[in-house]
Image 1: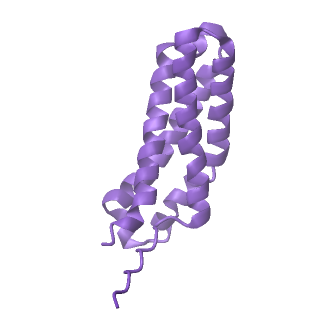
Image 2: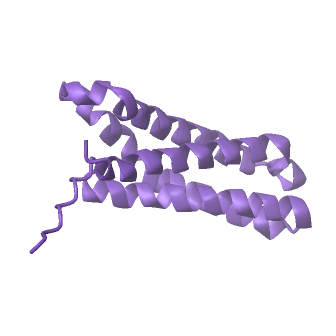
Length: 142
C-alpha cells in the first residue's frame, strides 16, 4: 500500500498568509479599475480604485514588521535567496501602494494618469511576487 508524502510546511504563518491575500487581491483589483477608468473616464472607477488601495494598505500594514521578524530573530535561513527577497517585496508593495494612495487622492483625471498607473502596476507586481514567494515556499520541499 502506497502512502502519500506529507506536504512540506509553509514558510508563512497562517494568519500572515491570510493578511497577504488581501493586498494581492486588492492591489490587483485597483490596477484593473485604473485600467477601466482610463478606458471609460467614469469617475467612480478611480474612487473604487482608491478604496481598494486603502484596504490593501490597511491589511498590508501588519505584514511590514512581520516580514522582517525572522531577521530580528537571527535565523540563518532568512538571510538567503527567496527569504531575503520576500520582505523587500512586501515593503516595496506597501510603499508603492502608499504613494499610489496619495496619487489617487488627487482630483479627477490627474488621479490616475501615467504616474497612478505605473504605481498600480508596481504595487500589484510586488504583491503578486510576494504572494508567489510566500505561498510557494512550502511546495518546493527542499
